[in-house]
Image (tube, rainbow, N blue to C red; front, side, top):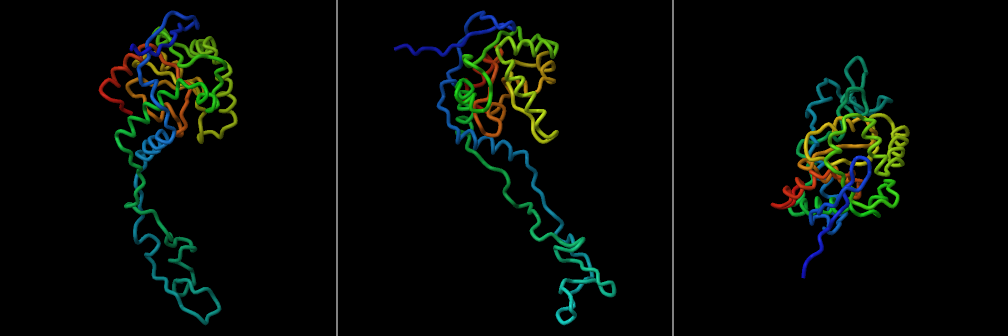
Length: 256
């Protein structure tokens, strides 16, 4: 019995249908939100650096406690000055529970779990319910969105904006713009459409100034890109060459 291939319509930069393309079988993978979250946490903690403190910090002082019977707190004080030192609540005193270098701050994940998380995150980009649950505005558009390789030749930011509007994502761009105005500068950034390209191209530079829009190559695509914060269903636009590269990348086993 023949298995039906998963296909998607290919659109040009004007939003017109120009053909169909077969999608990798990974788009049929089961969606495991718990595994995706584990993989994202493991990826984030890999960037953390162990921290420690000097074991003698705040303790290099001659301060001593005078004990009871003097009508004052029994914190260590420097002789003749009465300045409190050493204690954790004093100026220049030690830290009560300083960070330890030996603390385990990196979360580990098995290789097969990592592969399953990447496949699940990819599959979630084709699930309209999950994409809407992340807050993306897609209307009744069919997912996944695949565009022709001509999109990689766009050089101007205004061309990228017009291109996304012709794909029916004008409201999504407005959402990202309004959200950026509400967020405190430097704390968060709106997560809008993700453009997956085949390699280095002019589109990556042109899309940098569009709020919420990110561009990544198919070879460097990760679970973190597809499911920011561990929540799957990011609105993803695939440029046709990226699907070919993704298929080759997954042919020897899924890697994230």
